[in-house]
Structures are given as structure tokens and as C-alpha cells.
Length: 86
Image (cartoon, rainbow, N blue to C red; front, side):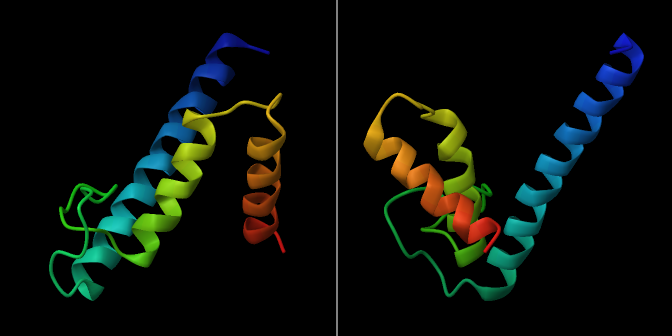
């Protein structure tokens, strides 16, 4: 693949992921009823996280902890895959 095209695709991917984080943050700001958990929200807003933030965190963690050789991880991956594309 042409290096310029590859660089453009990487930039678009990064922008898309950043947009998901921003959307989770907006959802969190609109629907949060204050701190709700011990963890800091994935969108960076603080508190325990909204539904959108939890969903974004699930997708993030699939890539963070990818282990296709682990049957339990593979099963979790397939569950998430079904939730994304029912």
C-alpha cells in the first residue's frame, strides 16, 4: 500500500477513536448523576463512568489485553463482537 495512503488511513483511524472518546465524554456529561465508582471514567470526566464510557472501555480493553490463544479471552472477544454486530 502507498505510504501516503497508509498514513492517511492511520490518521482517520486515530480521529475516529478520538471521536468515540469525545462522544463518551459528552454522553457522560449529559447523563452522569455524579461519581459512581472507584475507577476514573475512560472518557476522562472522572467518576465511575456512563454506559457509553463502559462500552468504550470494553472495546479498548479488547485490544489492550488481546490474547487469541486464551480460550476465555477468545470467548469474551466473540461476545463483544456479537454485541457490536448482532
